[in-house]
Length: 520
Image (cartoon, rainbow, N blue to C red; front, side, top):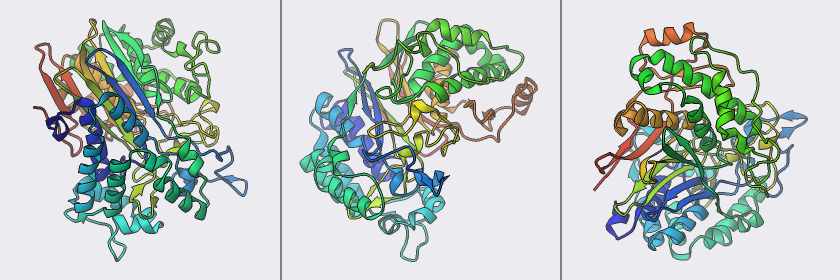
């Protein structure tokens, strides 16, 4: 809101919010991580900026093997867990290309809050408590997030991050080169060299935030604009919507929720099976465009029996799987819209809580653990239980597959209708999908859509996770159709903005956690 009041547009506002979230919600996102930016300008131009982290130049397939045994924790905690951060480059590209020169003021505001500190709430205190053993392993992280006696900061304590404040102030003055080719890159490379890490100055100097072609598909007369690979979310939200188009989802969500849940589980299984085999960084892997071919998706949909669950043994075979490819050569989500008609959705992340738990000394920057989003070995699940194949294997300079799913829905005439996205690992995809269905099919308002209960299925493990708000008799009906049920849990944390038929803009935040939505 401050960015808009200074004369900025929605892109400036989104940059300001992303930077501030890295200060006050730094266990989920920040400048040591990455992001995907999806936007639509007032002139109708679609934007997709890939700020995903990249593997170090010295990364290799066996980097997590110790004495002949795979060490999965090495890709989650410590120096080998981090890729080159991309958020700074992506936000700078957005600000310089589409904003109104608010880069410096956006960072200065974050720097001020980092320096002064803020009183932490339940979410941050809980995150510090859960990760305190890992944070304690790294002196700079312990100094920043733990008390002098090693105990975690608690609700109501003031979290001051003076090193991060100085880092943001330097970025505001000197721009992204300070981060990628100057003092920060040097500090990170020095720490990595002393702690058996692989990131070095050349990795930072070579990083580029890439402009990509947004993925545009259709659903019931609307255009669905999603993020292309290395996001799997854009691909599979489109794939699932096409599968769902033949079903009366609006009526079922309102009147036959067990049938709606059952069909959602069946389409999710098929999409996540395809994800495990086909999806990766399209600059390195052959990712077929046929995954969103309407006829292929209708074939998958035709396999669904609305009375009984069916086992999905493996991935499908889309058309032109080898010759029609993309690119032939813990997390936060935010969204902003302005009165001129600029729309933007950004999903930011350091991956799991506090990323690698490494804070680069004297910078305050929490480093990501995005290397865990690669398939570190065939069939080995990552921290979210996802498995992958060759398409998502570790390679130098490669970007790991992501579930981040910033999405914009356009009316048939191309005007924006809805933007949404979520945090929560693979549950991001499910949460975003169900927000779209609740608004477009069921006719709920955006705040009602975010509050409605959700389900999630990711094929492996073969378990359907419901949220706790579903009626017990509904879940018994679903289970009777052959679904193996997981313990209930939250399915993502989503944020959304809709433009109502009357032309009003309505912002909504997920009631599952602390958050806020603002409009003027």
